[in-house]
Image (tube, rainbow, N blue to C red; front, side):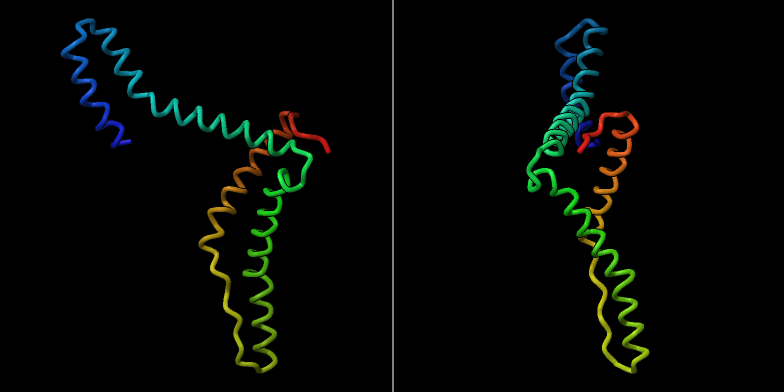
Length: 134
């Protein structure tokens, strides 16, 4: 936001030079200051419409990519926190020196957190009664 403020400040100082009406000058300065925020909201609304269209599609490859990504995340988490530690425990009990390394989850966690956010939106849709029935 500081970058935006640094860009808006010179424009508002120019308004002081060219517009004498203080109310009109303040209205234009406010419009300039909120322009980026309005643009971000419009982009988010457009993405929500795309998401709705994709989710309503009959083809599994269009509507099913989100569940597939979710299941990949579930399998990664299950492997890292259940299967690998249990396998390492069993290997240690058997006297083996083999240790299975854990999966690096730093690239998967942002995807998982985004999916959890979408899950929350889905819950809100269900409560509002606007979910798609199969």
